Length: 362
Image (cartoon, rainbow, N blue to C red; front, side, top):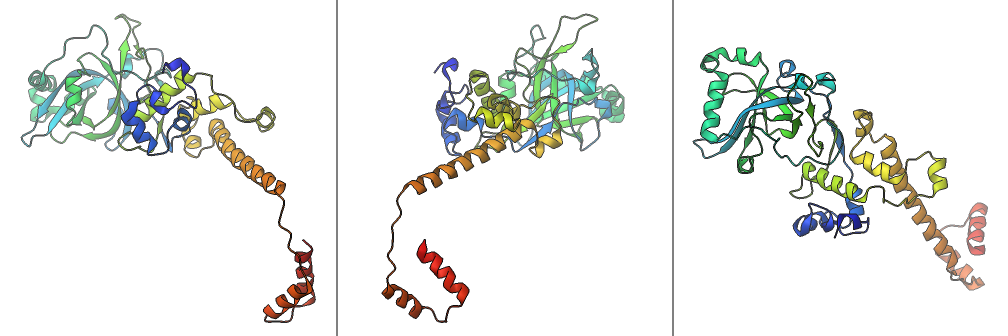
């Protein structure tokens, strides 16, 4: 199905990136249509808008850094584990025009992770290792690692990530946002490292005094923003779900019909449905993390109100239907009255008699 023909009632398998296998996983969680996917909202958010300088990092901190790749490659340990090892240097000062702590890619569709144009050819595993050794220097390997750290060095490692090597995801010279927990590298030079970081590759403008880091053609969904975190669906984690939701929203655009009466929406000062869905999944930069995690933003309030409104409307319809159905009238004869008196193990008071009379009258 062409993306332009996607509607809320379309089967979720027609969303770009889903397909039959993922559609089956989503169906196991009750996500069968595009509407179901859009109402599978985040249960929390992470603030990845602040970019930290490598020199300012602390062990145990979760941070976003902007760094330029120096060397990268795949190695195999004696135990048979593959480790993709990447060395990079702080590039936060290259974001001309705004301080490093405020640098942020534009909101947009997910990056395809493709390489920047014109970067050097990628080195193989053996060359990557020799590059790491030469980059950090023999003095660093012998205990002089602090001299390299003073220049903002950081390493990133992924275990059994052979796909990074096969797909040639990284190349020396690329500028990349990395996000994850920072620790000291116990086996290297004492520099900082991030294990299994999330990342977004960015591109740079033409070299020159005014060059600056720019988002790739499709801007970041993983870094540089308030990032939505979803409950995993089988093997589908938050990273995949973000891309699927973004694709669905991009395909639908503003073609999401309103489901609340206009009078109700205006009276309660609620935003429109399309905006509420978009900003719940991908909040504006101005939204506070505390408000997002407590579901107090205007977008989230709108969706919560909508849910209660639909429940209330459903109950009202059931009550109306029940009232329209004729009831069964029961005749209360003297024999019935005497039978009830015999059942009661006590003599009813005046108030109890009045209550029984009201029941009979009804």
